[in-house]
Length: 164
Image 1: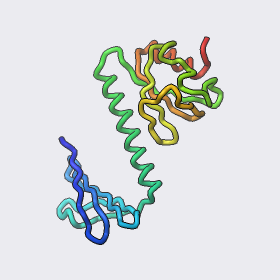
Image 2: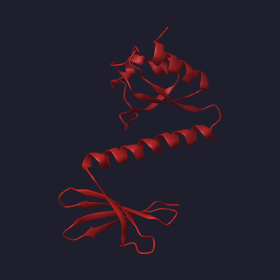
Image 3: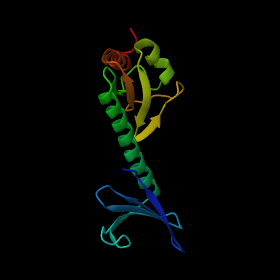
Image 4: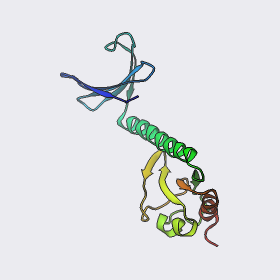
């Protein structure tokens, strides 16, 4: 199914973006002229009749977008690895006692040492896609890595214990 988002101008009010789900439900985000937002669920029988609305702040809207973004990114990587023999995806936590907490990703030399690719970092529910070697790691970060089973095991040991 093709996902389609419709934009509806609300003169004097703001704008509404609607998403029709595969099951026939309609979800919308109303952005008012003053910047306020509402997440809305519409009656499937009458797309102009709102059954339920929740006011959300800008921070909540951003957190919700990040939550969906992180979930979708990890799901796509997992699906890719399930469809490919010998390719796996793993999440590796940077713990407080990791030798790489507060160091850059480049300091780990993960790709050189383990032949594993770091495809994202999840930090406080936000996704940093395709991080550069200059990205500083923090305790609590979740590294999303792709590689062979042996490579991922080596990467987890590297991030946890350091080289050697």
